[in-house]
Length: 62
Image (cartoon, rainbow, N blue to C red; front, side, top):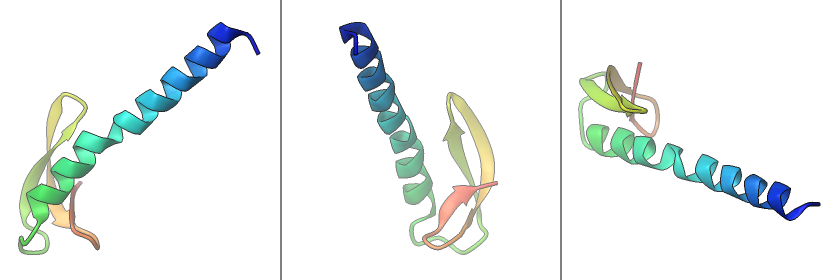
């Protein structure tokens, strides 16, 4: 493997690992201890999206 290819692969893997984290944390804290199905908002990239606290564990989703 060329060094540039390896570096690019590592960076893209890191980016994928880092991206979901804020959304997941936001989803969990928004719905912790809330009524099932209550309205909430979560971040989809830079956009704030309206959703509901659903699922197990409860998360803010559309």
